[in-house]
Amino acid sequence: MFDLIVKGGTLPDGTVADIGITGDRIAEVGKIEAEAGRVIDASGDLVSPPFVDPHFHLDATQSYGIPRINASGTLLEGIGLWGELKGVMTQDEVVERALTYCDWAASMGLLHIRSHVDTCDDRLLGVEALLDVREKVKDYIDLQLVAFPQDGFYRDPTARENTIRALDMGVDVVGGIPHFERTMADGAASVRELCEIAAERGLMVDMHCDETDDPMSRHIEALAYETQRLGLQGRVAGSHLTSMHSMDSYYVSKLLPLMAEAEVAAIPNPLINIMLQGRHDTFPKRRGLTRVREMLAMGIRVGFGQDCVLDPWYSLGTGDMLDVAFMGLHVAQMSSPDEMRKCFDMVTTDSAAIMGLGDYGLKVGAQASLVVLDAGNPIEAVRLRATRLHVVAKGKLISSTPRSDASLNLPGRDDTVRRRHSAHS
Ligand SMILES: [Zn+2]
Image (cartoon, rainbow, N blue to C red; front, side, top):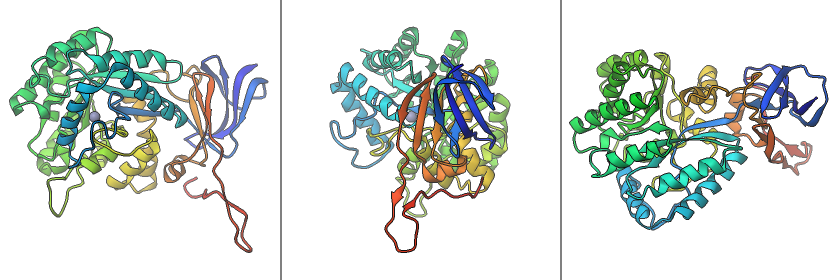
């Protein structure tokens, strides 16, 4: 007797299996004949572990237009605008906006989020707010928080002290922004000190790193070096890494093996970087996404992040990680079947590995969280940005969306259309 059985779904690897759930754990995967308190029929549909977003800003989301919109569309105006917003926002507003986003995420089957939280504020209002939100959503979303000195660990006069305070308050991961420090030397020094802080405390590291079109921004080299020096292999990620797009290829041929050797992961954010990068270019205009296929070929772990939804940097978004995979697939030109399939992994299992989620996945003993998609396989899920028919979080059905078949009124044709296709099955 199970609490819940998800019956007959197709798993991402193509096998068809029932999933039996007891409490908040997966108890059995395979052919199940037993009874259950509740049965979800998933036959013909894809059953996946939940979506994972390894890079988000939950303290800024849903603030689009407050106090004004980003007129130039650049990263730097976004940072300035966020500075204005920080001065006027209240803790209750941040909590409310973040909870609204978590509702959207839950309905999209996005149940693991790594969110940066700005620590350049003497009140640490955003930190207090997101620690509160982490607790409020813990029954359905696992929120991992990164202490992020947005205005520069050294450049902002109290950022260093406030970042350490945020870690003392229970923020999970050490962040940074070396390319925004006053000089390259300060950037490298910030990487060094922040990695030392992480090593002392046994924490992971995730830095905004080289989010610029400047090919000379090479802080990822320092990040890989410090990771190796301090024995942090497998616990460090570099987010964005957009300067790599513009770097000299000879230099990159040295850099990627160093990253692979240090087991530093990469987190590109395709929606946001295709929007923000190359804004100073005329034509040809650079795409600005980091070298995703090249890193994968070197065995570097890569996970796609959402980064922003309705905030000073990005005016769209719904919390749909399939939008992220879809954009990443296009911008990185990952068009072969294996590469398209990999784009699905980069918003599920690969990002879960970057975040160190040990009990993630559709396996016995893992957390009983999954999503049933109106798609036959992972590639079709990306193509359709498929409807989340059911979302199960920690053993409980938390969201359902009706299948969105369209009706057709055409002579001699079927009267409904679903847009599913058997290719890639
Ligand atoms: Zn970010």
